[in-house]
Image (cartoon, rainbow, N blue to C red):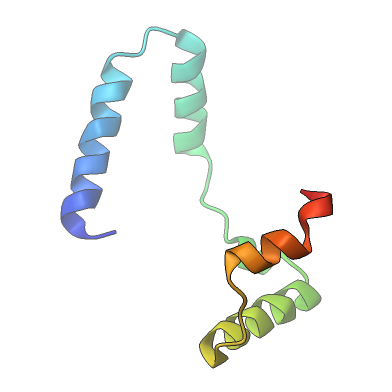
Length: 78
């Protein structure tokens, strides 16, 4: 996301927040603000990290299938 679109998004959020009348939504936002940012990469297993790295390597090497092929292959589970 470029700087201009990020600033636009932030202004949209500010506009939305100023119109909130639901106190529980305000409380949830306050709790979110106090919550420290988590680094999910540190929370996953080495096996999960390896699988992600393998997937990224496959993408770089062009070992990918179009969405329509994957959907057809897995349609019985979708």
